[in-house]
Length: 375
Image 1 (cartoon, rainbow, N blue to C red):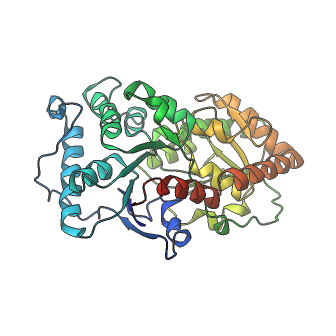
Image 2 (cartoon, one colour):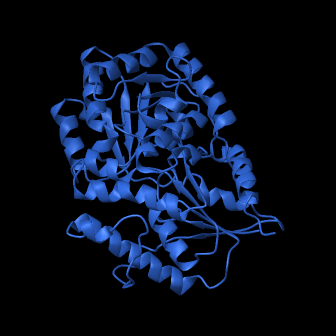
């Protein structure tokens, strides 16, 4: 069976999709399966001229928005690149972003399409202050869900919470499937260690949606309470300078290390103690599964896919979003009690191995793909 995994970002781009899709090829390498990856290179800009076709709404109602205009041009570029580069047919296409899905269906209308929605671009833009809720851009982006439902043979997402989020925007929400991201167990090797000072780590893009301002306030409270710790922030983004200034103003800059972007944080994640990320929204939150597989104690917010991964007090701690004091209280529990911290981490590791392994995801994907095999 010839499969195409259609991505938007290159495979090395950090994020949920890149944590799983590039590692599928090894598992599908057999005479029975033939899998290839396809994406839009960053150098392709403003090449496409083809008029996009939407079946469920008129996109021109929104074209006055620069955000929408950029999105449409990127769609045109992906169409141009697809027609230029793909010559042979596939038995099945699995898209992991709306733009590849729409482009692939336009180029290969008779090829079955599975569309997985991994995250909400509109929520990210709203939380990062780029667009307004219910504004022109928001309405355009949520209209895409019904379009994806229309063109797809199977519409998927990565968590039950995100399936619920998509429900108002589609005709048949009950038909949305859920397969969580899977993670190659061989990439994660827990390392026995003892840090005299507890080491906190977070890995994310530095944008408001990730709630790092809340984390810094919580860490300032921990210092006020007399706790020693080091906070390691791995990632880059537009909020970095603001966050560094905030750490200085809160008096915790000496306890905080900003690393910038790192390609494979899982290689040294096992040497830390506590993973913490107070996101304001997460469709799944792949980095929590990665931290669990590294045998770290987890502290996160009770939102989206994070709350599906963490059972509060069993394999991690959950706190409300936007609450620095609650976050400080949770961190205080795991900082002050190494045994409790280890019990949470071990239980998180067990759950991640059982529920978020790449092997399990591959098995579920294979069963789904075989429903579309050529007769």
